[in-house]
Every structure is written in C-alpha cells, then in structure tokens.
Length: 330
Image 1 (cartoon, one colour):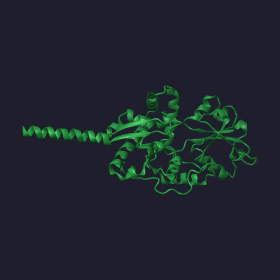
Image 2 (cartoon, helix red, strand yellow; image 1 turned 45 degrees about the vertical axis):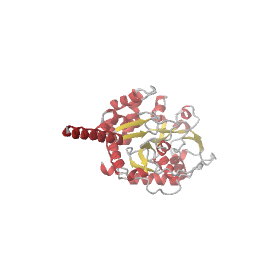
Image 3 (tube, helix red, strand yellow; image 1 turned 180 degrees about the vertical axis):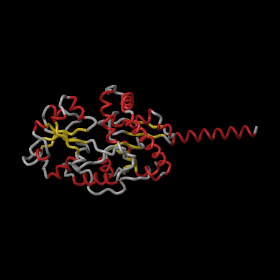
Image 4 (cartoon, helix red, strand yellow; image 1 turned 60 degrees about the vertical axis):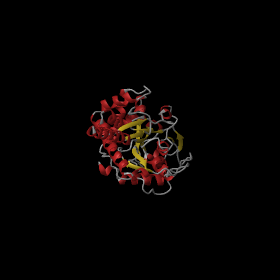
C-alpha cells in the first residue's frame, strides 16, 4: 500500500510538473500586420510542428490598422512582437522598454516607386514632384533621405510635396503622385497587377540609397530578459521560427497555402501569397536570426538624421535597445 501511495504521488507530481512546463512554455506572438506572406515563417513553424518540437505552445495574433504591437506587449497582451525597428526604438525612447532579440529580416523591402511618364528617372527629378509617403512610423527613412538630398518637404518649388499615402497604390494609378511608397512583397506587385510594367517604373530601394532601416524583427520587454527561463523559451521560439523561414524558402508554394489556410478573413489568394512569400524569402535569405550591429547602426543613423515635421522617432542614440542573449543560445 505504501509503495502504491508513493507511486501515485510521484505520478501526480510528474503530471503537475509537465502541466507547469507547458504553461511556462506558452508563447503569444503579436504580428505587426494582418495574416499574410510577410509572416509566413511563423505560420509554417506552427503548421509543421517546429514549435511543438521545441516544447512550445504558440499563439499567433494577427495585427491590423488599429493594432499597435508596441502597445499590445506593453499591456501584457503578448510575450514577443514583430515590428520595424523605427517604431520599436521610438517606443523605447517614450517609455516602453522594448529590446530586439532577433532579426529574421536581413534585407529591407521598402521602395519608392515612380512613374517614368511623370518625369522621374533619378533623384534629381524629385524636385517639384508629389511623393506618396506612409506615416505611422514609416515616414522616417523618407525624411532622412530628403535631408540627405537637401530637398525641403514643405511643397515649395525647390523641394517636394508630401502626400500622406494610405496603404494602397491608388495615388500612382490615378496619377495623384509621381512616386509612392511600396513594399517589394506587396504594393509593388499591386502596381504590376494594375497593368503598369517594370519598364515604365523607376524604383528606388531605401537601403541602396543609404537610408535603410531594419524591418521585421522580434522584440520583447527588457525586464523579461532578466529571467533565464524566459530567455530559454525565447531561444526555442527563435530557433523554431528560423526553421519556419528556412522551410518557407525551400517550399514557397506550401508556405503560401499555409498562410491562406490561416487567414480568417478569406480574402487571401494563393497566387497573391505565393508572390508575397517569394519576395519575402529574398529579405530573410542569409539571416540566422542574429542582429547585425552594422545594420542596427544604419537604422539609428537614419532615424537621427530624419527631419520630420511631426515627432521624431528618436532624439538620441539608444542604449540597450538590442540583445544577443537569446540568439547566443541558438
């Protein structure tokens, strides 16, 4: 009887430990935007069991126009978020201590896409033109670029007129602007689908112009990194996520289908998501998840040089805004 009792107690303790470990290893990921190929690696990691293999139970929360990942994590609604470095650093300076723990996106997908018929073939042709710019933290590389070119942004004859652009390509199609903001994996494809050929376009990549900034990285709250168990959990999460990105590069068609299967709106098509996944794969190519400090510094320099008519992203060089403690364990 005593042996049975001890055995039963040990079994109960084991089950409790397992249950506690699973609860401890749950992860909530808040995405920067809606379900789409931009986040294929995470959906693939979930679908293919890469998170489960690491002992993780991951919830992926889509974003949207009314969702700010920085606010979600500050309010305790997520363990980790995807966001661009500009809003991440801006949030840190304003009191939300975000830290970049990994950088799946090695390259930048932000473009300024222009119509040659509107007289734009080089940066010298910007003067006097209307340029479409995304705001909500996406405008900083644009203003850094204009400052670098010495072009005022107040609409004068010697500068450019800034059009606050919605997240669509209408201003270019309707010729309200000579150039608009696009992403390689999204809006640029929409321009082509509208019947405009690449030969009719002049395309500038912000990174090539020396004013690039890091895009989709993974961020957590700084105080969480003092907990070794949390660091270990994030290391498993990043490792599995990078396996997801690797799989998406090797199997873009399957990755696109997985994205569509996870789209709760039913608005996505496999064709569009295959285009997006294929283009996003170019941005994650070569990334191990480890943040390149030279890329980080270019982002900081770009943000500090941006002369924005609205609030600057940052006013001083950040301290402690990234950490390799998670990726050191990969």
